[in-house]
Length: 144
Image 1: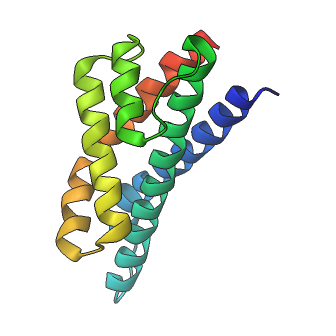
Image 2: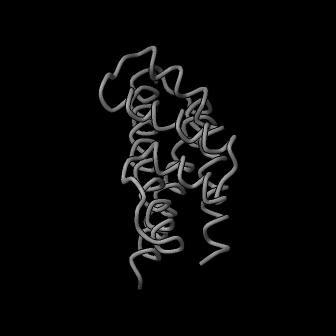
């Protein structure tokens, strides 16, 4: 298995796990008949955020490996620049690149400045980010 295929497989598994955790948080937790489910809600929410963080990390590294594989070396190995370069190489749209950079900013905020208001804001954006992640995965998979 090539390095690019390995990165694709890892990113794909992470994003599926992230999606599953988010759906559980959104759909199943509210259905549970518990006396006190506040702790469970917080633990599950934090799990979703953690999965968001590592899915984002694996996705940008996949895009970077894809750029190198298809367009050679010379790309900046930073998350934001990777998405900018992916737009320049016509792998993703400008709108998707901008959204991906916002996603990186949110990943950085949750990883370095964990606060309740950041978590709440991120939860509202997760459906948009999941959609973007899946789109990027599909686009790369079509090229593999």
